[in-house]
Amino acid sequence: MSRANWYKQRRRRKRLCIDEELILSLVHEQRRMHPRIGGRKLRKLLAPRLRDAGVSIGRDRLFELL
Image 1 (cartoon, rainbow, N blue to C red):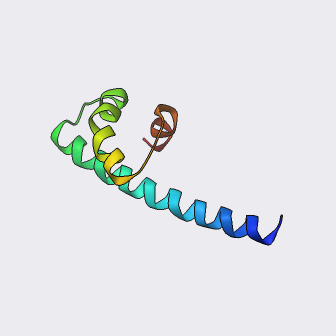
Image 2 (cartoon, rainbow, N blue to C red):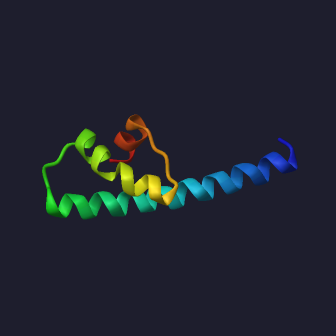
């Protein structure tokens, strides 16, 4: 692994960690209001707020986080 690749992966891992924290905080906020909401509806509700934050997440990755 080259030095540049190592630093690039390090930045990517850090960004993913921050993204996951943001997503989970938004999920907890929605689940307080709607405790029995499903994953697909949750993704649809959070999509505009995630887009504004510059976070893109797919259905499967969201399900893994949940």
